[in-house]
Image (cartoon, rainbow over all chains, first blue to last red; front, side, top):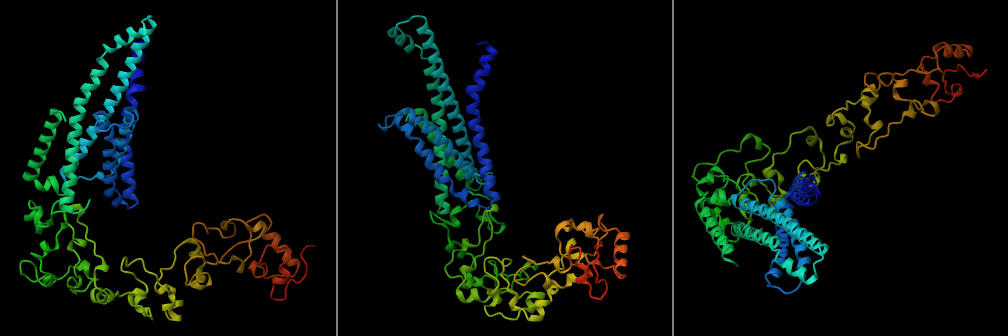
Length: 197
Length: 303
């Protein structure tokens, strides 16, 4: 594959879907929020924060599984559920936030959430890229006549792909932590001063 | 939890606490307070009871219920209502609200501060006494309504004044016929074209509703067969609404040339044939012999 063709392949097949997922999240929010305003159903948005938070909390099952806090569930399936539920939960919370500029605290939480979604999609891309590189290396080594034992040993040394995902996690976790703290602070403030969500 | 994440969490909590203490209103409030409450902007708990929302007792610390509508918090006499509220009387009703929370109607914080009065908060006696708070409307319609058995509630509800259900049976028979006393005469092409006939609303409409209406063109001319043409064919200018629809012409198509019609009628000894529909109420070719009322033209015209 030539260099321009390879670049087009990466943009079209690997980056575009993740970018589309982020742009789609924003577009869906604007459409949903606009529809609620047009139909006079803004009050629904006020309550969508609760299912949004529940979906995101449920998506942390994957994190719990990875850290062996729970022992059940296949990591692969939980990862896909983590991606889907955090995306959907974020969409509900964005509609809940609406295009309104009120107190700073909830908006800081929204910004942290969007940064978290962007970071998550970046991690998803990096993981997919690492898998593709590993498969490519495996195929090349098999073609060169390497024995299965030697292949495993060779691949175990190919940790570059694994390392980059590990490095990404060191960025993703603090962003997630910031989002969680800001969200909890917002929920606490709402309950403290409003007496209801 | 590794140390990096723990550090981020601790820094976040400290930052939020610091900002909330230093700038409580921009950090926590969904909008600014009304000018009269501006001094409380940094003291959220002056009005909000922890985990219970806006507290009526906190409102009453400054606003004595018995004084509402009588004197201000400062002790000065309460001002008269401004002109836009002229439909309301100066009646005091807060005293009849019982234990209703102030925030049920009065909200704060900018865009969220939408006043929302609910009649359901009033006690039954006051709720049913509409005239205690509302000035009776001085309109032609309300002055003609005869039966108020159910009071204002006969037509109106407490949720929406405009969404009323009016029964014309509450008007006298004479007022029931005097439609234009309350209804503006329609200005569309059809009604304009009806001329004097448009004053007879009951000729087409009933008091139960403007629609369905029953304009019967057949009362003047039955539109059948080849006569299913556009209005414009017989009433030139009808579409633009520039013609009286009582006026018409039958000379708009090839079957009815002025010379041909004249020849046909003179042959039968008919000389007064200017108003075609006087004898021809439909497109039936031989109808004229029955339709004429003056004894003329009794013979067949198909020879």
